Amino acid sequence: VLGLLVWTLIAGTEYFLYPAFGWVMFVAVFYWVLTVFFLIIYMTMTYTRIPQVPWTTVGLFFNGSAFILYLIAAIVDASSVTKELDSHNYNSWAASSFFAFVVTSCYAGNTYFSFISWQSRTLQ
Image (cartoon, rainbow, N blue to C red):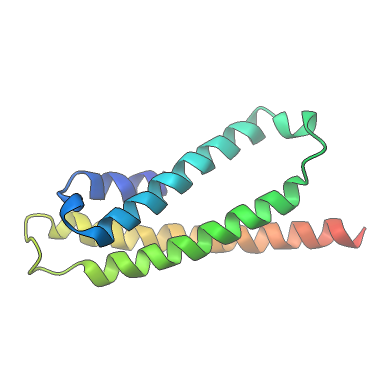
């Protein structure tokens, strides 16, 4: 939900005039789609029918890459928000920056728990 909020706040503006917001949009939409995809896989328990895939490793790499790229996108988003660019879009861009950092912290926590799960699987 928070990732959806990030990209809808930016999509409602003229973000295409500023390349930095294009990068944030790419990261937010890309990881939102992948997160929904993995959510469906886990809710339908499809992962139990595909035992060849190391799901704990996939989860660790997915969450780790989401954390790193979302952190970069959040920093780019925050550094690109200025009143001088376009005061009409300032509030939406500032809110998207805040929520990008919230999503980053969520992916960081999920990366930690994925690492713990991955580590316990490799120790067995």
